[in-house]
Image (cartoon, rainbow, N blue to C red):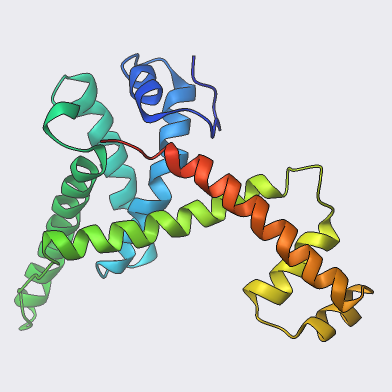
Length: 202
């Protein structure tokens, strides 16, 4: 049984869990893994936050419904390609309805969406963004690092502030900041590599 919030479940195990409609843990894990990517994709396709959230919700529900009905075959295509196709159609439908309303007011009803290769590029960028967010969340649960060490990394690497300023703010030495950067970067690479494997849906 897949547990809710499980960040270590492979795609194969996750899909097996989704075959059982009552497996809330599998649904929660699927939603946690893919909703942020679909949400980011929908935003990048020009939807506002509310419409993007609707598309993400509808895409997840539609996929699981089709999957449980036996319509998804992993041998014929990747999971992300299936999700992208659903998200594209949902986005196009929403934009088309809005365009029709604009046309009634004298505006343009033209709806344009990216080609497959561009959609793939956007998906990958949003996947990496979600991966970084998940990696930082997992890092904060790692008892090997205290909050100050993580803060030093965020201020120095993520925000790009000078090491001497970070050291002064956190009551550390500049060498402590460099050490924090190296230790956190190494651990983040390890976490991201492990999480990245979970998106293997070939």
